[in-house]
Image (tube, rainbow, N blue to C red):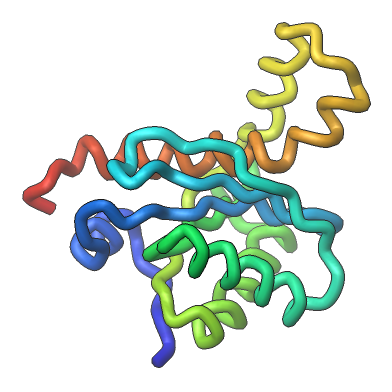
Length: 160
């Protein structure tokens, strides 16, 4: 059964209590992943997948979703600063289109503008070395994206 891309309000209606979410920051070379807690309050960096073939990347993501009982995938949507969609946003939409039939779980897009920049600035402020930043920035950006979606879900409340 194929899932569908939802907005955050639609996702709130589809997921049950104590179901986790996985967030993804899709890059051309890596996919940063983050995981929510079961109360969907806190996003934690999970891992970074080195991109290879779509089927292999999707299989790893589905395995993690199964392992942690994730009900849905929150994908960062890299919009341009003026809100328009460029090639990266189209690539994210294509990933979701191809991923949904394989996972059977809903996907939701979350605006990721400036997420990597915010994470990088935070790491620099913490005096993290350039090499260490390169190791963690993608999964931390995924956590930043997922946290934004979790915060919105919290504001929607249980009535949603």
